[in-house]
Length: 246
Image 1 (cartoon, rainbow, N blue to C red):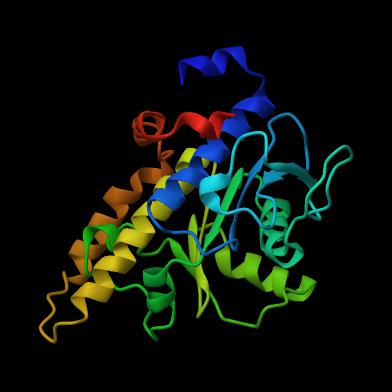
Image 2: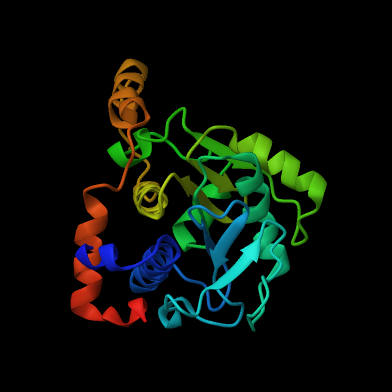
């Protein structure tokens, strides 16, 4: 966004995170007022932006985002509420992963469906193959995320960019908001394809060597994702409703 040059780093982060929320709403990935996307504030260690609890994703604007510390506590001079159990997931990952500048956690239908399947994500599509060897799994432990569960969650995520929370939802991390969003879009697409494909008893699965090679090619040595896609997505959002910037 060319207008970014007139904003400071926090304002830029606010605009891009608000855009991420709006794009999720457009794709119907939201779940009433639940689930969260958090982003680190550049130059402010242990300070993050997150949605106010009670707002839907399509209502989020840059100015409505709340500024919190790593415990999910509001910084002074703000009003609003953060879902404490929701930020427990985000805080644990932000503390453990310096590269996790953005953490997305969603309750999309296809992602939950695949997370509930014993074998998890299968290499049934190119979208899914991208995650072979690069996807974590975390077993469902109930609503309350304790500190000890946070440790297990971080361990299960490891260095992966994405994870399926069993019976719960999807999670991605990114070095940028754009990367977390594009990885999430790819993961959800892979899950949607799997749910559709499993309606047939006659599935074609690529061979192990093809899967291994394609996974390596698609991972591309961990090159940053979202660099090309994100500006196009922002242009789309600007055409539909630019109020996310407010």
